[in-house]
Image (cartoon, rainbow, N blue to C red; front, side):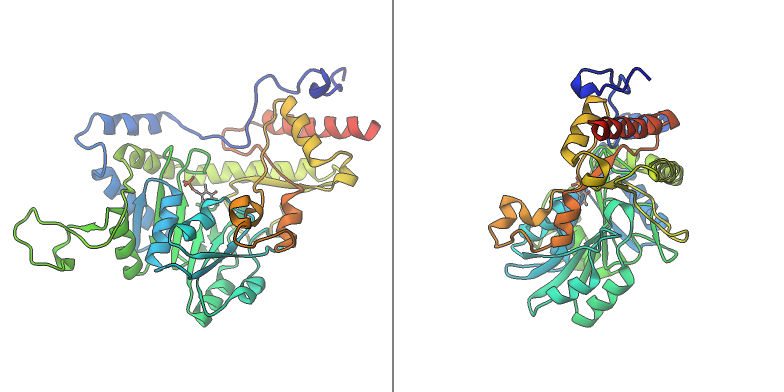
Length: 400
Ligand SMILES: *Cc1c(COP(=O)(O)O)cnc(C)c1O
């Protein structure tokens, strides 16, 4: 190979076209579903909203679903439904996107970060229990990379301490836990339909629950706090037009355009899942003999729909550090990402007293991970490009 000079030092990149860590998968069915809505009577909150609610409930074994304009607003609704107020404490992970904790802050709650388990990268139930105080009201557990958290243990903890279990399932749509779909297990489960997520509407979100109380509250807050349901009116109605604002809610509406796209995408979730998991298997196999790279491990009976493919780099064994690898890959036209910069160490969360050393495992993991491209439209050649680029970079630094 005459191409072993790294692109970052003026060599020829492994590929001409950049490949990103994630990408949507849109086909003609999706396009037609959206166009049909554009030609119809309703652009927002029409029949596609109703159909999506039914589809979500049926697909994920849930009694109720509340749609919203993004995953973050659905998390906010979950916190409102859990009755989080000023001074209430909520425990979550630090290895997550900001929204998993910001939703607590929107309600004035205090975020407590519990450390993760080093192999699953999910919040550690033992450490969660240590963080519980008189003020704790809820746990927001994040299914990192698609792997469900230890729901059984977390549910036991929540029952014991009278806490609400909110599952941030932005990564794990399509995953199952002990034979049950994510979305049917926690008190409330939140999905995101952002463009990079496994099922997308461009933007979008949903809250799933089996508890009528949570459903009613979440729905009320998603619609300005206004209800049109005569059964729940507090004042006397004086005509069919009557509606009532009962709390200060929000406009978290999802358009029918997005709802139609999400329904069309959900039809392909099993296909997406199979494709994603094949790529994970291929990566795990191809990367297994590269020194200094640890791949995500899973058991035969795990039923995961992988959302991101996160490797860990042992810099000494690999031959260069994470930043050098990231930048060299970028020059080879392979765009990776870090999921995530630990949340408790962001300036915003540091102001509450969070500091280095609070979540040592999450901190260590966060400084050594990289998400490689993973999306259903990836071809074998794309996977090979990524692996070959990593090998090329290692060879260069090992020689140097
Ligand atoms: C994407 C994501 C969210 C937020 O979803 P949006 O739809 O972007 O608002 C929340 N939590 C996690 C873990 C996510 O990855």
